Length: 169
Image 1 (tube, rainbow, N blue to C red):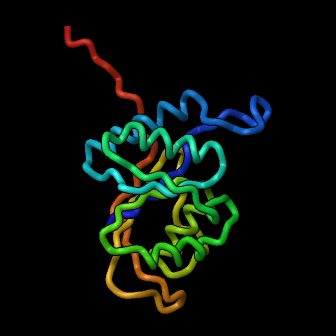
Image 2: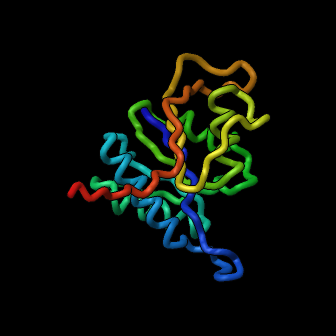
């Protein structure tokens, strides 16, 4: 099982649009992230996402550009200030073969990664940039403090930069 924690892409300002949809940069960043996941062979089978528009749009763009069937599932408890233990409980119930991505917000995702790897949600040891990703895999045992299964970091990727085309001639 791989767990990918993905922060939503860049959104327009609340002054421009109070619903804060993804900006063009945010859309482009998410499409590049999907291409990277596809190329790495780490595309998730399921994506849980926050109900907030920029996270829903990020999840939908990922699913559209991963090149394989992906189930999108809106989940509660994925907003900025939500308790990461609520999602950790849901993760503990998943079968060990489920590859999952969670699209959400900071500081929640950083606190969730910290809880899964250390057993404590604070101090937060991770920060995701917009359209960034942390990939975790199950580790042996459970955390004594929380009782949640242990996870280990497999990688952390900042937003994938645009490719610079070089004219060889």
